[in-house]
Image (cartoon, rainbow, N blue to C red):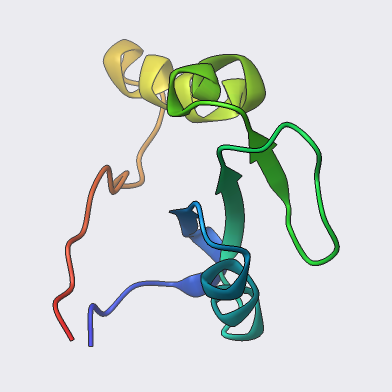
Length: 82
C-alpha cells in the first residue's frame, strides 16, 4: 500500500506485538521504550531521542546526500492509514 521496499525500511513501535508483526513482513524493527533487545527485534531504544547513537548509518546517508555523493532517494517518513 505504501509502495516501500521492506528491506530498506525501519518500523518503530513500543509494542512488541506490533514489532513482531512488522518483522514477519520483512521490515527492520526498532522497539522504543526498552533498552533490552528482545527476540525478533533488530534494535531497542529506551527513547526515540537515542536514535542517532543507535543508528548512525541513517545520518551517514544524509551527509552523503548533502555532499552530492549519494544518488539514491532516502525516505524519511511515510504515513499509512489502514
